Length: 337
Ligand SMILES: NC(=O)C1=CN([C@@H]2O[C@H](COP(=O)(O)OP(=O)(O)OC[C@H]3O[C@@H](n4cnc5c(N)ncnc54)[C@H](O)[C@@H]3O)[C@@H](O)[C@H]2O)C=CC1
Ligand SMILES: O=C(CO)COP(=O)(O)O
Image (cartoon, rainbow, N blue to C red):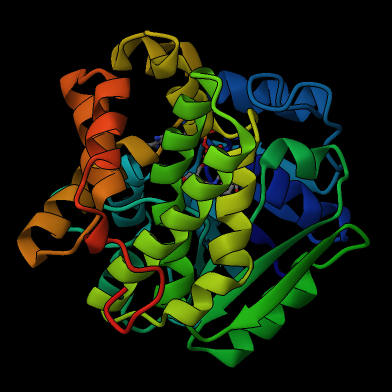
């Protein structure tokens, strides 16, 4: 009998990934916390809270029993915000067996430990193959049927190949990579710069400025990656520059929307409340700033954005400060840049 696939988390991305696999003919079990929402999804074949109007395949079934979702699954995709990721993974520990493939889709970092989600999976499930799915993947665009590509990264070639088979469709493609750290770090860091981009859009900046922001964001991300021991070349692919472009350009990005709301003068609390979904970049900004200070990594965008987001510094003053920095600290390409 064909084994099912489990997706933990029924938010926008969990739902869309589950539905791609279900539409490809795989039985998929989506695990949620809320029984009413699970029942409603099963009856209406729609996730009205996150993706209204998006028809779900008959092969997709939602439920709230974690054992039912996980036990016997061939692969388990974890699509839970980073703030609850460890807690859910720990809950699943009793049901997971070593041959099951574990894939994180979460683009965030654990507060205080600076662990990425694949680190948490590898720590809790040392005998399982672990992978990361990351790329320019706005859930609402995937649901709308726009052609989309992602990266499946794992040290296990077998995991990459199986995920490619399960996920690829006429509109969705997954490219394989063995650089788990680089792929995951790119998807995590870009959320910070999406906030900055949304903020600058609200201020009505021009295209020169937008282009400067995106390319200097890439330089800053790469500098951080090198300091952390990652391969910056990975940032030139879909999970780096690809994801940076989409989230820095689209109002569909929740991180961009938080930045836009801040740029309109709203408080951080109001921006998050209005969003009603996860914007991972807020926590990532805090954690990356701390790392940059501890490791003395030059990250002027992170430092400036942190002051705006967490200390309500006037954004125009922060920008003016950056523009009056000694120009000789700015080198476009060098071994340390
Ligand atoms: N939405 C998107 O376009 C994309 C999102 N991602 C990443 O996927 C991850 C999940 O994102 P979304 O699904 O979009 O988030 P979301 O905010 O739409 O949904 C999160 C889901 O997790 C559930 N959840 C939260 N805490 C939980 C807990 N303790 N136990 C059980 N369920 C819990 C929520 O109820 C909700 O169903 C994020 O890290 C995000 O960065 C990645 C690519 C694209
Ligand atoms: O990661 C994403 C697209 O690739 C989604 O970005 P947001 O979390 O900002 O919506």
